[in-house]
Length: 215
Image 1: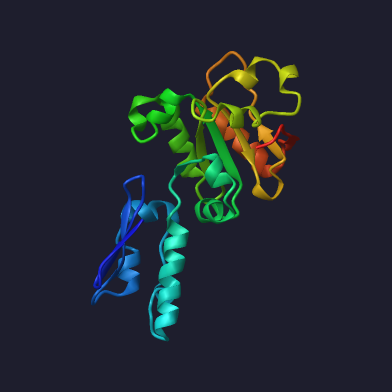
Image 2: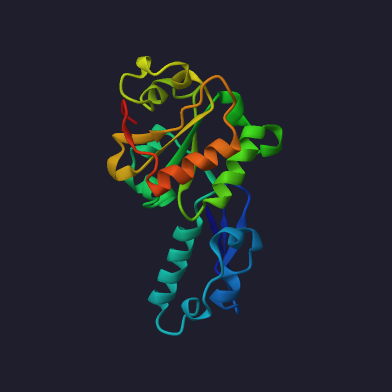
């Protein structure tokens, strides 16, 4: 969300990260770079791209681009409403491939307190390191069991117990969400190293997409 007055504007994200957008008497460059937590992920802004020397409309456009480019949290909750709303989906994930962690309800409740759950902590570390390459999300299995059932390979009943084991993860691209890559872990906890190897394999093409039941 953006909280604004006549003299200031602040971007406030759901993960608690805040950044000034504009302030009276302060250049956009100084405002844009005022949050170390935000720019640990996004990198620095070029001075020449952060000034408003031309027209007010160009200044507004730069502020709008800053908001759009910095609104995505490290791990974002994904719901059917967001997924099936092109405007909401693009605002959150852009054109990036999306990693989906399907998690039990108890794990979903710990998403904002990662110290309480080792899987959540591992997911955040992995998502942070891959922030520029993919968007990371989670779906609450307890809230959306029917939707989750479609996040499986075709004929899921032939694939064994891993399809019904949570947390589990997949990775898809919006332009072809009839396919997804699945990390198949059976009879053991989903580890951080397994997640990282899976992501690397998908992004390099070593792990191929498969037809899925229907996200």
